[in-house]
Image 1 (cartoon, rainbow, N blue to C red):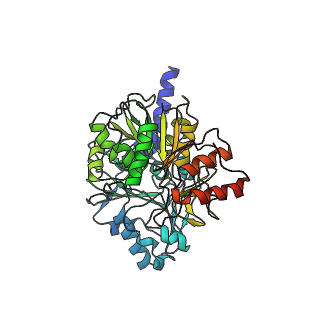
Image 2: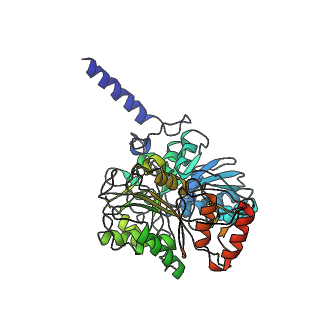
Image 3: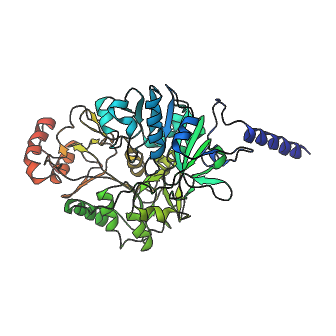
Length: 479
Protein backbone atom coordinates (compact mmCIF):
# COMPACT_ATOMS: atom_id res chain seq x y z
CA UNK A 1 0.00 0.00 0.00
CA UNK A 2 2.83 2.37 0.91
CA UNK A 3 4.52 1.58 -2.40
CA UNK A 4 1.27 2.38 -4.25
CA UNK A 5 1.03 5.76 -2.48
CA UNK A 6 4.62 6.57 -3.45
CA UNK A 7 3.82 5.73 -7.08
CA UNK A 8 0.73 7.99 -7.02
CA UNK A 9 2.73 10.84 -5.49
CA UNK A 10 5.48 10.39 -8.08
CA UNK A 11 2.87 10.47 -10.85
CA UNK A 12 1.50 13.76 -9.51
CA UNK A 13 4.99 15.26 -9.35
CA UNK A 14 5.77 14.23 -12.93
CA UNK A 15 2.44 15.62 -14.14
CA UNK A 16 3.20 18.93 -12.42
CA UNK A 17 6.67 19.04 -13.99
CA UNK A 18 5.39 18.41 -17.51
CA UNK A 19 2.52 20.91 -17.34
CA UNK A 20 4.62 23.76 -15.92
CA UNK A 21 4.85 26.73 -18.27
CA UNK A 22 7.95 26.95 -20.49
CA UNK A 23 8.14 30.66 -19.83
CA UNK A 24 8.89 30.53 -16.13
CA UNK A 25 12.17 32.20 -15.17
CA UNK A 26 13.14 29.75 -12.40
CA UNK A 27 16.20 27.65 -13.09
CA UNK A 28 15.64 24.24 -14.65
CA UNK A 29 17.48 21.12 -13.58
CA UNK A 30 19.80 19.41 -16.05
CA UNK A 31 20.78 15.75 -15.93
CA UNK A 32 22.94 14.07 -18.55
CA UNK A 33 20.90 11.43 -20.41
CA UNK A 34 17.71 12.17 -18.39
CA UNK A 35 17.07 15.82 -19.02
CA UNK A 36 14.25 18.12 -19.92
CA UNK A 37 14.66 18.40 -23.70
CA UNK A 38 13.73 14.72 -24.03
CA UNK A 39 10.63 15.00 -21.86
CA UNK A 40 7.43 15.96 -23.73
CA UNK A 41 5.58 18.96 -22.31
CA UNK A 42 1.88 18.17 -22.17
CA UNK A 43 -0.54 20.40 -24.06
CA UNK A 44 2.18 22.51 -25.64
CA UNK A 45 3.14 22.96 -29.28
CA UNK A 46 5.47 25.44 -30.94
CA UNK A 47 4.15 28.47 -32.74
CA UNK A 48 4.78 27.58 -36.38
CA UNK A 49 5.76 30.58 -38.49
CA UNK A 50 6.47 31.05 -42.17
CA UNK A 51 9.71 33.04 -41.99
CA UNK A 52 12.71 33.52 -39.73
CA UNK A 53 11.89 37.22 -39.59
CA UNK A 54 8.50 36.47 -38.03
CA UNK A 55 10.12 34.11 -35.52
CA UNK A 56 12.60 36.74 -34.31
CA UNK A 57 9.80 39.31 -33.98
CA UNK A 58 7.67 36.86 -31.98
CA UNK A 59 10.61 36.10 -29.67
CA UNK A 60 10.73 39.83 -28.87
CA UNK A 61 14.48 40.32 -29.10
CA UNK A 62 15.36 43.30 -26.92
CA UNK A 63 18.34 45.31 -25.74
CA UNK A 64 20.72 43.78 -23.18
CA UNK A 65 19.45 40.25 -23.77
CA UNK A 66 21.60 37.11 -23.88
CA UNK A 67 21.23 34.82 -26.89
CA UNK A 68 22.64 31.31 -27.31
CA UNK A 69 23.42 30.13 -30.84
CA UNK A 70 23.97 26.51 -31.87
CA UNK A 71 27.17 26.13 -33.87
CA UNK A 72 29.30 24.14 -36.32
CA UNK A 73 27.30 22.57 -39.18
CA UNK A 74 24.07 23.32 -37.29
CA UNK A 75 24.59 27.09 -37.27
CA UNK A 76 21.10 28.60 -37.86
CA UNK A 77 22.33 31.14 -40.40
CA UNK A 78 18.84 32.18 -41.52
CA UNK A 79 17.88 33.05 -37.94
CA UNK A 80 21.12 34.98 -37.49
CA UNK A 81 20.35 36.99 -40.63
CA UNK A 82 16.84 37.77 -39.41
CA UNK A 83 18.07 38.62 -35.91
CA UNK A 84 20.71 41.01 -37.24
CA UNK A 85 18.27 42.82 -39.53
CA UNK A 86 15.67 43.07 -36.76
CA UNK A 87 18.25 44.38 -34.28
CA UNK A 88 19.45 47.08 -36.65
CA UNK A 89 15.94 48.05 -37.75
CA UNK A 90 14.61 48.31 -34.19
CA UNK A 91 17.85 49.78 -32.80
CA UNK A 92 18.27 46.96 -30.30
CA UNK A 93 21.45 47.53 -28.27
CA UNK A 94 24.05 45.41 -26.50
CA UNK A 95 22.72 41.93 -27.26
CA UNK A 96 25.33 39.30 -26.36
CA UNK A 97 25.54 36.14 -28.46
CA UNK A 98 27.14 33.09 -26.81
CA UNK A 99 28.29 30.35 -29.14
CA UNK A 100 30.96 27.88 -30.16
CA UNK A 101 32.45 28.24 -33.63
CA UNK A 102 29.87 29.24 -36.23
CA UNK A 103 29.71 28.38 -39.92
CA UNK A 104 28.56 30.71 -42.69
CA UNK A 105 28.03 34.45 -42.57
CA UNK A 106 28.13 36.34 -39.27
CA UNK A 107 26.46 39.69 -40.09
CA UNK A 108 26.06 40.52 -36.39
CA UNK A 109 29.87 40.68 -36.09
CA UNK A 110 30.35 43.40 -38.71
CA UNK A 111 31.91 46.62 -37.31
CA UNK A 112 28.82 48.68 -38.17
CA UNK A 113 26.71 46.39 -35.95
CA UNK A 114 28.97 46.58 -32.90
CA UNK A 115 26.52 48.75 -30.94
CA UNK A 116 23.73 46.23 -31.52
CA UNK A 117 25.46 42.87 -31.02
CA UNK A 118 28.50 41.52 -29.24
CA UNK A 119 29.69 38.02 -30.03
CA UNK A 120 31.10 36.01 -27.12
CA UNK A 121 32.82 32.86 -28.42
CA UNK A 122 33.66 29.69 -26.54
CA UNK A 123 35.81 28.89 -29.58
CA UNK A 124 36.61 31.54 -32.18
CA UNK A 125 35.76 30.79 -35.80
CA UNK A 126 37.11 32.63 -38.81
CA UNK A 127 33.88 34.59 -39.33
CA UNK A 128 34.13 36.37 -35.95
CA UNK A 129 37.93 36.41 -35.55
CA UNK A 130 38.38 39.92 -37.04
CA UNK A 131 35.74 41.26 -34.64
CA UNK A 132 37.48 39.67 -31.64
CA UNK A 133 40.86 41.04 -32.70
CA UNK A 134 39.34 44.50 -33.26
CA UNK A 135 37.69 44.53 -29.83
CA UNK A 136 34.13 44.40 -31.21
CA UNK A 137 33.65 40.84 -29.92
CA UNK A 138 34.93 38.74 -27.05
CA UNK A 139 35.77 35.17 -26.11
CA UNK A 140 35.75 32.94 -23.04
CA UNK A 141 38.89 30.85 -22.39
CA UNK A 142 37.46 27.52 -21.25
CA UNK A 143 37.94 23.78 -21.53
CA UNK A 144 35.41 22.30 -23.93
CA UNK A 145 34.08 19.84 -21.35
CA UNK A 146 33.30 22.69 -18.94
CA UNK A 147 31.23 24.85 -21.31
CA UNK A 148 27.89 23.28 -20.20
CA UNK A 149 28.68 24.41 -16.64
CA UNK A 150 28.41 28.01 -17.82
CA UNK A 151 24.68 27.38 -18.36
CA UNK A 152 24.01 24.71 -15.74
CA UNK A 153 25.47 26.81 -12.93
CA UNK A 154 23.86 30.06 -13.99
CA UNK A 155 26.85 32.04 -15.24
CA UNK A 156 24.90 32.67 -18.45
CA UNK A 157 21.09 32.56 -18.54
CA UNK A 158 19.97 32.92 -22.17
CA UNK A 159 16.82 34.85 -22.93
CA UNK A 160 16.64 33.24 -26.38
CA UNK A 161 18.24 30.15 -27.91
CA UNK A 162 18.57 29.85 -31.69
CA UNK A 163 18.90 26.27 -32.93
CA UNK A 164 18.73 24.17 -36.10
CA UNK A 165 17.06 20.74 -35.96
CA UNK A 166 15.59 17.94 -38.03
CA UNK A 167 11.80 17.70 -38.53
CA UNK A 168 9.88 15.98 -35.71
CA UNK A 169 9.29 12.24 -36.11
CA UNK A 170 5.98 10.48 -35.48
CA UNK A 171 6.61 10.71 -31.72
CA UNK A 172 7.35 14.42 -31.88
CA UNK A 173 11.13 14.21 -31.51
CA UNK A 174 13.48 16.48 -33.43
CA UNK A 175 17.23 15.91 -33.54
CA UNK A 176 20.00 18.40 -32.86
CA UNK A 177 21.77 16.56 -35.66
CA UNK A 178 25.38 17.51 -36.18
CA UNK A 179 25.82 19.62 -33.02
CA UNK A 180 24.93 18.38 -29.55
CA UNK A 181 28.01 19.69 -27.63
CA UNK A 182 26.75 22.25 -25.07
CA UNK A 183 23.34 22.79 -26.71
CA UNK A 184 21.26 20.70 -24.29
CA UNK A 185 22.59 22.62 -21.30
CA UNK A 186 21.85 25.95 -22.97
CA UNK A 187 18.32 24.89 -23.96
CA UNK A 188 17.55 23.66 -20.45
CA UNK A 189 18.18 27.18 -19.16
CA UNK A 190 16.78 29.34 -21.98
CA UNK A 191 13.48 31.23 -21.68
CA UNK A 192 12.58 30.94 -25.37
CA UNK A 193 13.75 28.47 -28.01
CA UNK A 194 13.56 29.45 -31.68
CA UNK A 195 14.26 26.65 -34.16
CA UNK A 196 14.91 26.24 -37.84
CA UNK A 197 13.36 22.96 -38.97
CA UNK A 198 15.41 21.52 -41.82
CA UNK A 199 14.90 18.17 -43.55
CA UNK A 200 18.59 18.35 -44.60
CA UNK A 201 19.68 18.09 -40.95
CA UNK A 202 20.79 14.51 -40.21
CA UNK A 203 18.70 12.75 -37.59
CA UNK A 204 21.21 11.56 -35.02
CA UNK A 205 20.79 9.75 -31.72
CA UNK A 206 22.30 9.65 -28.24
CA UNK A 207 21.74 13.01 -26.55
CA UNK A 208 20.58 14.63 -29.79
CA UNK A 209 16.83 14.21 -29.39
CA UNK A 210 14.63 17.10 -28.26
CA UNK A 211 10.85 16.96 -28.14
CA UNK A 212 9.10 19.46 -30.38
CA UNK A 213 7.03 20.71 -27.43
CA UNK A 214 10.15 22.46 -26.10
CA UNK A 215 10.30 24.71 -29.14
CA UNK A 216 8.53 28.03 -28.71
CA UNK A 217 8.80 29.27 -32.29
CA UNK A 218 9.57 27.09 -35.31
CA UNK A 219 10.27 27.87 -38.96
CA UNK A 220 10.69 25.39 -41.78
CA UNK A 221 13.78 26.23 -43.80
CA UNK A 222 15.07 23.40 -45.94
CA UNK A 223 18.58 24.24 -47.11
CA UNK A 224 21.79 22.16 -47.39
CA UNK A 225 24.15 22.32 -44.43
CA UNK A 226 27.51 24.11 -44.70
CA UNK A 227 30.22 21.80 -45.98
CA UNK A 228 33.98 21.53 -45.62
CA UNK A 229 35.11 19.80 -48.81
CA UNK A 230 37.83 17.20 -48.30
CA UNK A 231 41.15 18.86 -49.07
CA UNK A 232 44.11 16.82 -50.27
CA UNK A 233 46.93 16.99 -47.70
CA UNK A 234 50.25 18.54 -48.64
CA UNK A 235 53.32 16.31 -48.87
CA UNK A 236 54.38 17.55 -45.42
CA UNK A 237 50.98 16.71 -43.92
CA UNK A 238 51.04 13.34 -45.64
CA UNK A 239 54.43 12.59 -44.06
CA UNK A 240 53.15 13.62 -40.63
CA UNK A 241 50.18 11.32 -41.11
CA UNK A 242 52.50 8.48 -42.09
CA UNK A 243 54.65 8.88 -38.97
CA UNK A 244 51.58 8.81 -36.75
CA UNK A 245 49.76 5.97 -38.52
CA UNK A 246 52.80 3.69 -38.70
CA UNK A 247 54.30 4.39 -35.28
CA UNK A 248 51.67 5.64 -32.85
CA UNK A 249 48.33 4.06 -33.83
CA UNK A 250 47.94 0.39 -32.92
CA UNK A 251 45.19 -2.08 -33.80
CA UNK A 252 42.30 -1.66 -31.38
CA UNK A 253 43.16 1.98 -30.63
CA UNK A 254 40.46 4.49 -29.74
CA UNK A 255 40.96 7.67 -31.75
CA UNK A 256 40.26 11.34 -31.15
CA UNK A 257 41.06 13.81 -33.88
CA UNK A 258 39.72 17.07 -35.12
CA UNK A 259 39.05 18.40 -38.57
CA UNK A 260 41.73 19.35 -41.06
CA UNK A 261 44.34 18.01 -43.42
CA UNK A 262 46.56 16.33 -40.82
CA UNK A 263 43.76 14.26 -39.20
CA UNK A 264 42.51 13.35 -42.68
CA UNK A 265 46.04 12.33 -43.66
CA UNK A 266 46.27 10.05 -40.62
CA UNK A 267 42.88 8.48 -41.33
CA UNK A 268 43.76 7.86 -44.98
CA UNK A 269 46.74 5.76 -43.87
CA UNK A 270 44.88 3.51 -41.42
CA UNK A 271 43.28 1.23 -44.02
CA UNK A 272 45.29 -1.78 -42.85
CA UNK A 273 44.45 -1.28 -39.17
CA UNK A 274 41.82 -3.36 -37.41
CA UNK A 275 39.18 -2.82 -34.73
CA UNK A 276 39.72 0.91 -34.37
CA UNK A 277 37.28 2.93 -32.29
CA UNK A 278 36.20 6.57 -32.28
CA UNK A 279 35.65 8.62 -29.12
CA UNK A 280 36.09 12.23 -30.21
CA UNK A 281 34.35 15.56 -29.70
CA UNK A 282 34.27 15.82 -33.49
CA UNK A 283 35.03 13.68 -36.51
CA UNK A 284 35.24 14.18 -40.26
CA UNK A 285 34.87 12.46 -43.62
CA UNK A 286 37.92 10.25 -43.16
CA UNK A 287 35.99 8.18 -40.64
CA UNK A 288 33.35 7.16 -43.20
CA UNK A 289 35.74 5.31 -45.50
CA UNK A 290 37.34 3.45 -42.58
CA UNK A 291 33.90 2.31 -41.42
CA UNK A 292 33.04 1.14 -44.93
CA UNK A 293 36.32 -0.82 -45.12
CA UNK A 294 35.71 -2.47 -41.76
CA UNK A 295 38.68 -0.79 -40.05
CA UNK A 296 36.51 1.08 -37.53
CA UNK A 297 34.37 -1.38 -35.57
CA UNK A 298 34.50 0.08 -32.03
CA UNK A 299 34.56 -3.54 -30.80
CA UNK A 300 37.57 -3.05 -28.50
CA UNK A 301 36.06 -0.11 -26.66
CA UNK A 302 35.12 -0.69 -23.03
CA UNK A 303 32.39 1.98 -23.11
CA UNK A 304 29.84 2.48 -25.91
CA UNK A 305 31.16 -0.66 -27.54
CA UNK A 306 30.18 -0.90 -31.18
CA UNK A 307 29.39 2.83 -31.40
CA UNK A 308 31.16 5.92 -32.72
CA UNK A 309 30.96 8.60 -30.03
CA UNK A 310 31.03 12.26 -31.04
CA UNK A 311 29.58 15.60 -30.01
CA UNK A 312 29.62 17.81 -33.12
CA UNK A 313 30.97 17.77 -36.65
CA UNK A 314 31.46 19.62 -39.91
CA UNK A 315 32.17 17.83 -43.16
CA UNK A 316 30.78 17.01 -46.58
CA UNK A 317 27.35 15.83 -47.67
CA UNK A 318 28.80 12.30 -47.65
CA UNK A 319 29.45 12.62 -43.91
CA UNK A 320 25.99 14.06 -43.21
CA UNK A 321 24.34 11.25 -45.19
CA UNK A 322 26.40 8.72 -43.24
CA UNK A 323 25.20 10.21 -39.95
CA UNK A 324 21.50 10.32 -40.86
CA UNK A 325 19.41 7.73 -38.98
CA UNK A 326 22.58 5.79 -38.19
CA UNK A 327 22.46 4.05 -34.78
CA UNK A 328 26.18 3.25 -35.17
CA UNK A 329 26.78 6.88 -34.11
CA UNK A 330 26.01 8.36 -30.69
CA UNK A 331 26.11 12.15 -30.48
CA UNK A 332 26.57 12.90 -26.79
CA UNK A 333 26.93 15.99 -24.63
CA UNK A 334 30.43 17.43 -24.54
CA UNK A 335 30.73 17.45 -20.75
CA UNK A 336 30.62 13.66 -21.01
CA UNK A 337 32.53 13.05 -24.24
CA UNK A 338 35.40 15.36 -23.27
CA UNK A 339 35.54 14.56 -19.58
CA UNK A 340 39.21 13.53 -19.07
CA UNK A 341 38.09 10.79 -16.67
CA UNK A 342 35.88 9.29 -19.41
CA UNK A 343 38.61 9.73 -22.02
CA UNK A 344 41.07 7.92 -19.75
CA UNK A 345 38.84 4.83 -19.72
CA UNK A 346 39.12 4.28 -23.49
CA UNK A 347 41.55 1.49 -24.51
CA UNK A 348 44.74 2.64 -26.26
CA UNK A 349 43.39 6.19 -26.30
CA UNK A 350 45.19 8.03 -29.12
CA UNK A 351 44.52 11.77 -29.14
CA UNK A 352 45.77 13.66 -32.20
CA UNK A 353 45.71 17.45 -31.99
CA UNK A 354 47.49 20.38 -33.58
CA UNK A 355 48.83 23.71 -32.41
CA UNK A 356 50.13 27.10 -33.48
CA UNK A 357 53.60 26.84 -31.95
CA UNK A 358 55.64 24.91 -29.40
CA UNK A 359 58.70 25.95 -27.42
CA UNK A 360 61.82 23.83 -26.91
CA UNK A 361 60.56 22.56 -23.54
CA UNK A 362 57.23 21.30 -24.91
CA UNK A 363 54.89 24.16 -23.99
CA UNK A 364 52.02 24.17 -26.48
CA UNK A 365 50.23 27.30 -27.73
CA UNK A 366 47.03 26.55 -29.62
CA UNK A 367 44.70 29.49 -29.09
CA UNK A 368 46.63 32.66 -29.86
CA UNK A 369 49.36 34.20 -31.98
CA UNK A 370 51.21 36.22 -29.40
CA UNK A 371 48.60 38.44 -27.78
CA UNK A 372 46.10 38.05 -30.65
CA UNK A 373 43.39 35.52 -29.88
CA UNK A 374 42.97 33.10 -32.77
CA UNK A 375 40.76 30.16 -31.77
CA UNK A 376 40.30 28.71 -28.28
CA UNK A 377 41.10 25.83 -25.95
CA UNK A 378 38.70 23.48 -27.68
CA UNK A 379 39.03 19.88 -26.57
CA UNK A 380 42.80 19.62 -26.89
CA UNK A 381 43.71 19.54 -23.20
CA UNK A 382 40.65 17.42 -22.35
CA UNK A 383 41.88 14.63 -24.60
CA UNK A 384 45.63 15.12 -24.14
CA UNK A 385 45.13 14.85 -20.37
CA UNK A 386 42.77 11.88 -20.65
CA UNK A 387 45.16 10.01 -22.94
CA UNK A 388 48.16 10.84 -20.73
CA UNK A 389 46.36 9.50 -17.65
CA UNK A 390 44.75 6.53 -19.42
CA UNK A 391 43.66 3.68 -17.18
CA UNK A 392 45.51 1.10 -19.28
CA UNK A 393 48.68 3.24 -19.45
CA UNK A 394 48.64 2.80 -23.22
CA UNK A 395 47.36 6.26 -24.10
CA UNK A 396 49.17 8.34 -26.70
CA UNK A 397 48.70 12.13 -26.47
CA UNK A 398 49.98 13.55 -29.77
CA UNK A 399 50.56 17.10 -30.99
CA UNK A 400 51.05 17.25 -34.77
CA UNK A 401 52.16 20.29 -36.76
CA UNK A 402 54.14 21.30 -39.80
CA UNK A 403 57.63 22.49 -38.94
CA UNK A 404 57.23 25.96 -40.47
CA UNK A 405 54.51 28.49 -41.22
CA UNK A 406 53.52 29.49 -44.74
CA UNK A 407 56.08 32.30 -44.40
CA UNK A 408 58.88 29.91 -43.47
CA UNK A 409 58.96 30.79 -39.75
CA UNK A 410 59.74 27.88 -37.45
CA UNK A 411 56.79 26.65 -35.40
CA UNK A 412 59.28 25.23 -32.89
CA UNK A 413 60.57 28.25 -31.00
CA UNK A 414 63.08 28.86 -28.18
CA UNK A 415 60.23 30.53 -26.27
CA UNK A 416 56.61 31.17 -27.14
CA UNK A 417 55.77 34.59 -28.52
CA UNK A 418 55.15 37.32 -25.97
CA UNK A 419 51.58 37.03 -24.75
CA UNK A 420 51.01 33.56 -26.21
CA UNK A 421 48.79 31.34 -24.08
CA UNK A 422 49.81 27.86 -22.98
CA UNK A 423 46.90 25.53 -23.72
CA UNK A 424 48.75 22.26 -23.08
CA UNK A 425 51.60 22.38 -20.60
CA UNK A 426 54.86 20.47 -20.97
CA UNK A 427 54.03 18.03 -18.17
CA UNK A 428 51.27 16.27 -20.13
CA UNK A 429 52.82 16.39 -23.60
CA UNK A 430 54.07 12.97 -24.73
CA UNK A 431 54.61 13.06 -28.50
CA UNK A 432 55.16 15.95 -30.91
CA UNK A 433 55.23 15.10 -34.62
CA UNK A 434 56.35 17.09 -37.65
CA UNK A 435 57.22 16.00 -41.18
CA UNK A 436 60.77 15.39 -39.88
CA UNK A 437 59.91 12.83 -37.24
CA UNK A 438 58.56 12.13 -33.77
CA UNK A 439 59.81 13.74 -30.56
CA UNK A 440 59.10 11.55 -27.53
CA UNK A 441 59.10 13.81 -24.46
CA UNK A 442 57.75 11.83 -21.50
CA UNK A 443 60.31 11.45 -18.74
CA UNK A 444 62.81 13.66 -20.57
CA UNK A 445 64.77 16.53 -19.02
CA UNK A 446 64.76 20.04 -20.50
CA UNK A 447 68.11 19.27 -22.13
CA UNK A 448 66.74 16.09 -23.70
CA UNK A 449 63.46 17.71 -24.72
CA UNK A 450 65.18 20.54 -26.52
CA UNK A 451 67.34 18.00 -28.37
CA UNK A 452 64.30 15.91 -29.40
CA UNK A 453 62.40 18.95 -30.65
CA UNK A 454 65.32 20.44 -32.55
CA UNK A 455 65.70 17.11 -34.38
CA UNK A 456 62.18 17.46 -35.81
CA UNK A 457 62.46 21.18 -36.59
CA UNK A 458 63.04 22.33 -40.15
CA UNK A 459 66.75 21.90 -41.03
CA UNK A 460 67.03 25.61 -41.87
CA UNK A 461 66.25 26.52 -38.25
CA UNK A 462 68.09 23.85 -36.26
CA UNK A 463 71.37 25.69 -35.78
CA UNK A 464 69.63 28.85 -34.55
CA UNK A 465 67.47 26.77 -32.22
CA UNK A 466 70.55 25.07 -30.75
CA UNK A 467 72.14 28.45 -30.00
CA UNK A 468 68.91 29.79 -28.50
CA UNK A 469 68.50 26.62 -26.42
CA UNK A 470 71.99 27.08 -24.99
CA UNK A 471 71.22 30.70 -24.11
CA UNK A 472 68.00 29.70 -22.39
CA UNK A 473 69.06 26.48 -20.67
CA UNK A 474 72.78 27.23 -20.17
CA UNK A 475 73.63 23.85 -21.64
CA UNK A 476 73.71 22.26 -25.06
CA UNK A 477 70.76 20.11 -26.13
CA UNK A 478 71.70 16.44 -25.89
CA UNK A 479 69.90 13.05 -25.91
